Image 1: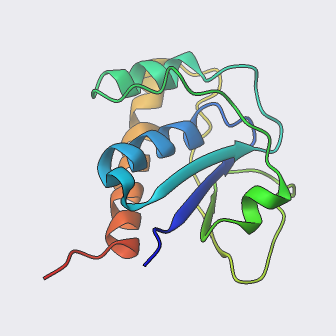
Image 2: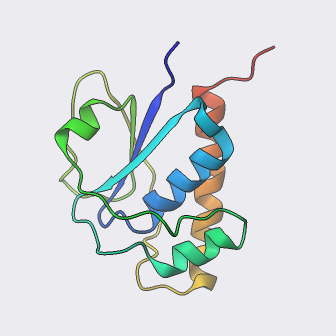
Image 3: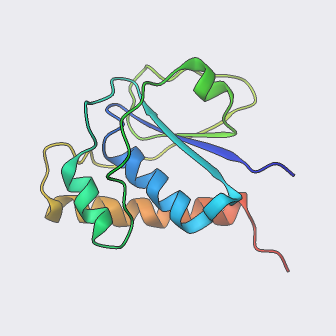
Length: 135
């Protein structure tokens, strides 16, 4: 069985989607391919997102925002949107989910921590769904 591919999409690909990829890579290892993109990527990853992830031992400082392309979506098994507006292309056979999460842009670390924790809980549930524990 090939490993599932998950694409996290938000507008700037600088906060929520980067934290989600960090958690998925950290918690699922190589069992799930984790990617992210943005409909209007920022220049750099949100420093508050980098800091709150570093607090729990996950380094996303080497990540950079990437542009969302139709090919990236089409080659994903699951696309999770976190506020990408109407820019997300839709393809048959791709599973779409929308995670309504606050945008960490312009917020300090105290405001970003709860967003981080909500993303972690959702990623843990996603891993349990995509890679069920073997008996």
